[in-house]
Image 1 (cartoon, rainbow, N blue to C red):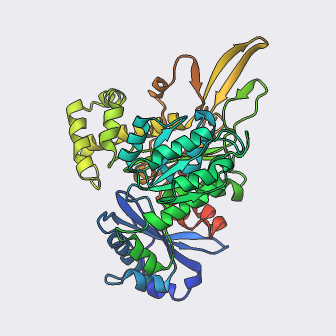
Image 2 (cartoon, rainbow, N blue to C red):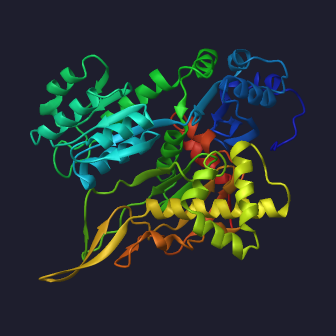
Image 3 (spheres, rainbow, N blue to C red):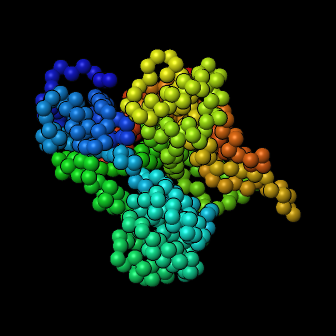
Length: 483
């Protein structure tokens, strides 16, 4: 929906102030969105916004439609519009970037691999620890990740297992890219094992116990995204037309979440939930609170963290959402007088037609139930756990994972959460089923809820690297608090 009435064509307007205006486009699995931003130190702002259903067979077609809407130019080509004003773009289409994380110890190198992959904007297709088995290899081949992130061992430590894992992968039919980020003493041997395939190596994710070193591997993951994922489906034509590489959408949002507290010190201890058609991404910007009576198990949690859930989505993943969370969904639907047959039929409908918007009150209620499930489950999976352990010196609390108890604000974005005005969507009902009786989830104790009411956070994530202060100011000025 336009933010303001245009009195003249957009292109003629921007000729007067090209340097102050940029277009940002995000290609999602369901919709392709675009926004025009005024980039000035004095009152940066959203000027206009447009969207269209994504065109999966040719992503450039959807991008062209959005640009023409924003430009008020029904026949303009992407190259023509980009010649007049800078165009940035990001993409989570084509399923995003899939990574299989392979490590040794689940709570150390495996967890380090997961955090690295998620912070680079990827989604995890499989997690494997210790020595890879035949069934592990079969799963890697079946899921066909774009990257296998192969880690394990501190520098100078165990080499045997990571070499075994490398040999097992090399002997399989997997033909994607191997990113090695493990024990440097095994690098020469592993390099020879993969000498005939696509192989990249980075510094060890965990060169020594307690030291997490994700950035070198993150950089290689971004390189693979640009070199491999951009090819085909029209993404390469967009790159050629706008003169810029795309950014993985989750990476952009991750950078924006990190920039918010850096630019505005009043915004700390917050989370952001990006509910999409295919996945639900949960981001937190908060340090684990220090407590002398609490012992942390595993990796020290990063301040900014992302997790992504591929079975939690409002459209493309609606069928898997229903399959894995049927009992919780049907119980909530029953409270809203939604019959199970109707809900099942609606899920089939939106799975076949992801761009479908709810028609009538019953479909709107069904969407609410699906969205609420995605929100609650993504929060539960992101949150850490704590349990009481008795030792010879007394009772100790053992914490594992991200502690969200101090989170004071939660932002909702994505097509559904940006429009939802009911704070009830963030209720945590039912998620206690995921924890056993001896542990508690580290969920927010008291939080205020906000919505990205113009749904612009993905587009701001696309430009935040070049315009951090302006992007944060626009993002925060476009939030509405839910009462």
